[in-house]
Amino acid sequence: MESTNAFTNALAQLTKAAAVIKLEPAMYQRLALPQRFLAVAIPVTMDDGSVRVFHGFRSQYNNARGPFKGGIRFHPAVSEDEVKALSLWMTMKCAVVGLPLGGGKGGIIVNPKELSTGELERLSRGYIRALYRYLGPDQDVPAPDVYTTPQIMAWILDEYEHLVGHHAPGLITGKPLAIGGSAGRGTATAQGGFFVLDEAMKKMGKKVAGTTVAVQGFGNAGSNMVDLLAAHGYKVVAISDSRGGVYHEAGIDSKQLQELKNNGMSLESYCSGKAGACRAITNQELLELPVDVLVPAALENQITAENAPRIKASLVLELANGPTTPEADEILFTNGTKVVPDILANAGGVTVSYFEQVQNAANYYWPEAEVMSKLKAIMVESCSAVWKVQEEHNITLRTAAHVVALRRVTEAMAVRGI
Ligand code: GLU
Image (tube, rainbow, N blue to C red; front, side):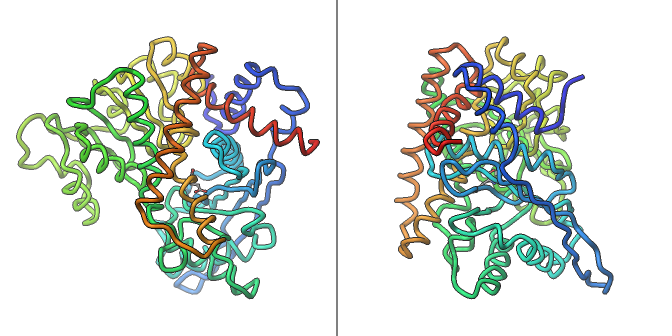
């Protein structure tokens, strides 16, 4: 039976890379567990006066290269193992793009769509009250992830600064610009993915004109990616959100789709009055469409051993974390599909988070063009380094990315003596 436990799958990826570099067993054992895992109960007074207690987590996976770094997820499917997996991936992600940061991740088991703004604020403040001793600009630096926003980062920072009694903008990234956010952070995950896609297309000898794309997920990463693709001549023919999606052969007008979503309408209502083939599709159908590029930008375990044989795209760009299972990876590799892995493809977000920290520390802020040119240089260079390792060893791009990252993480561990 195929595993959908994200931590089991993350360790399987680590194991493959460890074999390529013949990693010492003690190093492997150290990397197979988070350095510290925190679990907290967060009582929140709800608007009706009742109290609900939420489960919150922070996994501090590895800090050999720098402070733990990684987002906080608010989602009903959050679990201890999911948070551990995401924090292992953050460790590898920061290393593959060469950031002087370790890896961490947080989460709360909650469906934020069911909370009022006031309840969400009290939950966010409760999370940092429970954990603030373990976080800080030089210890562990959170950021947004699935269903968390710049506003949530602002509440967390404000609560933290009240607790410690001084300004500390470097505590958290993905903040609103008004309190020390970085220009370009909002679109950074998609933008970084786009730079990597451009580079991958060149390496594969593919032309952009006429290239069709399906994007699963219409959150921060997915919706910004759709805009970038459309602006650069790609034809986005399918988009979905958690409720389902839409396929339009002629190419989807993303602005119109965003308006529908903002008005609380389902994506499929987009088709009314459209010329050419246009229909509602499920998230599963989207993955199997006859497109050139597939962009999973939602959650884990979307491409599995079950549907991988039917994936038709020749290039998969993982903007989500962990969308492909290890078994599916093998199938796609055998079929010649290139999978640009999450830890490379979506590293633009944490890269601009790093720039945000640097700007906070200097209290000096860069124009967006400077952020973007620095981001581009890092993404293009990292993509080339991973591509080279993949060719040298004839391995998947994922294993190659983990090899690049693992070499860097274990070098830092070795010189520290752990
Ligand atoms: N949550 C994002 C990720 O998975 C960003 C993390 C960060 O900026 O620290 O990469």
